Every structure is written in C-alpha cells, then in structure tokens.
Image 1 (cartoon, rainbow, N blue to C red):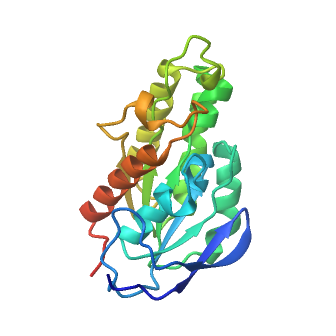
Image 2: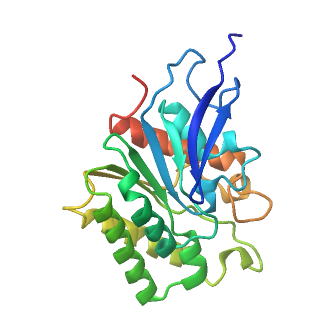
Image 3: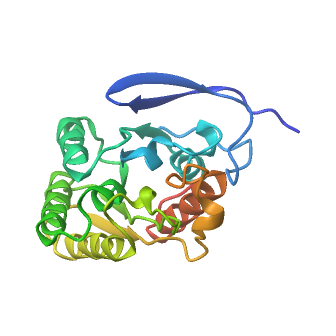
Length: 234
C-alpha cells in the first residue's frame, strides 16, 4: 500500500485555531492516497454531531469524511450543545474570515427540538434565525443538513421535551428558510436525513449522537449533495 504523506489541516474548534497533522490512514470512503492536497475548504457550523461526538475517532466524524471525499480542508466551527441562536452568533463572528471558494455546511436543530418541542413561537424563531444566517452567508454555497431521527425509547429522555412531531416541524422550518432566501446565500442545498437512517443501528449508546455508521451515512448524504452542486475532487 502506498503511504500517504502527512499534511497539515487547518481546523477551528470552538474558536481556537488548530493545525492538525493528518495520518497516512485515509478516512472511510475517502479518495485514493495519491489525491492532491487542496487549499479549498469545507467550513462547518452546528452542534455536537458536527463536532464529531459519537464517532470512535475524529477521522470517522461526518465532517472529516465529507471534507476528504471532496478533497477540501475542513474548518470546523461547531460547538456541542448549540442551538440555532448560538450557531448564528458564531457565523456572525466568523463571516469575515470566509473565502469566496468556501463551501459552508450547517447542521443544526436537534437541540432546539429537545429544548422547545412544538412551541410555534420557537419554531418561527428558528426559521427566522436560519434566514439571518443565510443572509450573512450571501455569496457562498451553503448546505443545510436537516436533523435526523433519534431512537424511540420508553422514557424518551433523549428527546427532551421534543419528539418526532417537533423534529418534523423544525426540518420544515429549515426548508422554508431555504425557500425564502432569494437574496441570501448564492446556492443553498438542503440535505435531508439519509433514507437508510435507522436510529436503532446508527445512534450511539448514549441514544443521542450518531455512531460511526451514523456519521458515515450523514457524510454520504453530504457528499451526494456536494457532487450534485458540482463540488468535489478535480
């Protein structure tokens, strides 16, 4: 096997700039080892799924896999526990650092679902905050990744005060925000939950975060969306 030389990948976690040396082992589903290193970036925002919680290693998180498959450097501004308002604040702070060639992926919503349930005012505010995020990202290609289903358990503690009905409301609000964003981001792509998604198999033992299989499924959906938008390895 041809060993891949280590490269430096720029990542930002919680506002801290990190230089991460990638090992010779490629993430699952990534391109062949002789793929040229690109300076184009996949910039991600959102909650703990985007941080990579639930994956057995950082390389098995969906942002790392998706960035490798698209031959892009990953810059990750995600923060565990964030709801849409916190993500909006991070987008506002980092907007001036974005490059014209950046592709932005945002996965948000599950913590809003768990905190607010079906409250109509909260759902409306979620849509409004997403609209503001998209206006801030005007001129960039943006992927909006919808929230995935959690397991149905006897206690439903993993859902907080939310549930499947609330999840559907928030995903519909994300779809409306994208549809209404005529003068916002240059190109907006909705990434729906993977059709193969099985909460019993794809959520970690904490009943909340995706495991390796779940991260791989989200990465596959993001990769398909990127390819559909003409973004990928040259």
